[in-house]
Length: 208
Image (cartoon, one colour):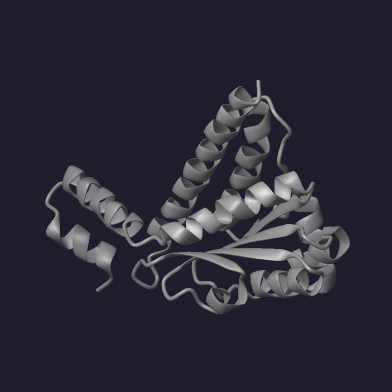
């Protein structure tokens, strides 16, 4: 029985399940590697300072996270009143995605975009709970071939992305529990972007 199913079986009321689920998320966030998160933050900062673009890609719920993360990170500079991060979600256009999928195959959705957009030193944030999504794997390979820096937001055992990406933040959830992994990925978006906003605000004050 999967862990969430076990939680449900042990709960008599909905509120009990909610509390147990939130506790599970709290336990998962304690397993995160803080040094890996710091590495991602520093990677973003370096990209901003060097005028590089940060791309985001994912499937399904992770596609939504990719677009959300790209938007939030792009807003950081505006909120802080300083030079912005250059961000782009590879999941943003339904017309483009369906055209690429229809003409070249679903596995090429992101790698084709990377081949056309990415430059040396640009960053790709690859979001995949399993770490094994074929189109994400292809995108990472393409980005690395072009001199890009790769970040993996993964879950479970990390999959193939665990060893492929330059930086990896892994949510150590039970295999198959996609919801909690995607929850933590979204929380990481808000933690990282809020931290960067406050950091840039403080740096702006210090330079005055």
